[in-house]
Length: 552
Ligand code: NA7
Image (cartoon, rainbow, N blue to C red):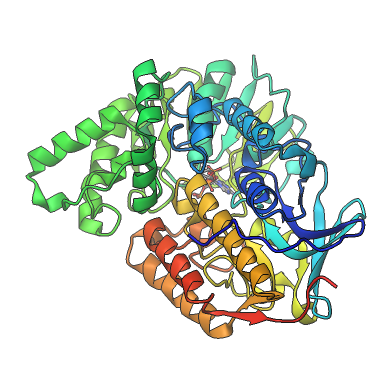
């Protein structure tokens, strides 16, 4: 890792003048502020649209919202003191506990005084004459900074599909990613939930337990493996604290940044009986580890089919009504080619008297009416509440809703017209001194998020330290490096089954009109970290470094 401790004298500032503006106060923004201010001594400010810190966990408060990564790995790993002093209560942390954790971190490192809440960034433009960014907020405030760092998250721009008639609906409707803080009272209500991704699969069992009736509108059936969430035992908590160095090492050495390794065996190295036994054990254990039982589940269709069939059999065994079971198990993509959900009694929920599955792939929604949803067949579902668990304009959405302009007024929207183009998912050609934490083209969403976030924040801090030390004013990806990285991102995706899920948000396919480009880097976190380190060690190869005085 580059040295983040070397500093050069900080420049003198006027009002609104900063070394760095960081957009977003989730996991990424908080740690980036810590790296830049507490370690490098820079003047940095975080601008956050929400009225509280927490990023995705500030917004996602829907029933059942919890992380799919295990709590002992869904946290910062840079500080042994944090590991020592924080205690998670459950195997998978629920949203309020994650917010409490981030609050604890922010207080521990005295971050809040440099975080400006309730401040939505409207746009930013780069001035080549001064090598600085001017950042404007929706309220009309202006900030100037040498570096602009986006910590905007990958899944923060809610996707409410344009289904005709929503404006006529007389009931209440909500998107899971913008859930009211006071909660929603489902008691006695007829609820319709559109969407069966990770969110819908978490929400449905909880909504069903509270509402009079729930209809789940399913377009694409999905795999899910039990989470087996439970309170953590004291023995486990002690083991995590005493063995954290090993856990961190594993998270840094694995493809997905999780605290478990992928078995080196092929599906076909074992007999069918032994394989079933392995899958049964994995099912009983639960969690995202299911796909790590064999090395080829995510790369070979034949290998994948064995896991897929196992899960489909489980669905058919759990769900009592054969017709509903058939609809739930009629899955059209390889297991884990879309983000694999984990659940707490999702399939069991369809055995409840008050739950119904509507197959909107067979019979699509025609429109939303004043009183509910009408399908093309004419079938009507009367509803009091409509829940959109319809996901996000992933990865590029949070960027493109801001007006970001680089050299010569080039907008990010223009630069990404045919899909996002970045170098390492860290910078965009034409946008000097813009750093994009977990940006498109980096491993990001394919990983346990704190791991890629820490790696990016540290790399960016190291890069800025290098620039300060060597009197470098600007850094910008070259066209050649951008082109080569796009080829590497494609190559890495093609080596997996990931591009084979045609409706996946990894491809931008969930948002009509969005360019279909496989966005995250699928080459693995450990490999990616090595590439970034090498780029830094070789004097930031692939970047053009400009020597113009930056902070006049
Ligand atoms: P996802 O995974 O994008 O799931 C969204 C769901 O909503 C999915 O089932 C979609 O079906 C469905 N959807 C989206 N638009 C429509 C329309 N127009 N009509 C019917 N159904 C629709 O989002 P999640 O919030 O569940 O998960 C996002 C990530 O957050 C998750 O992976 C974790 O990383 C955390 P489709 O598959 O497009 O047919």
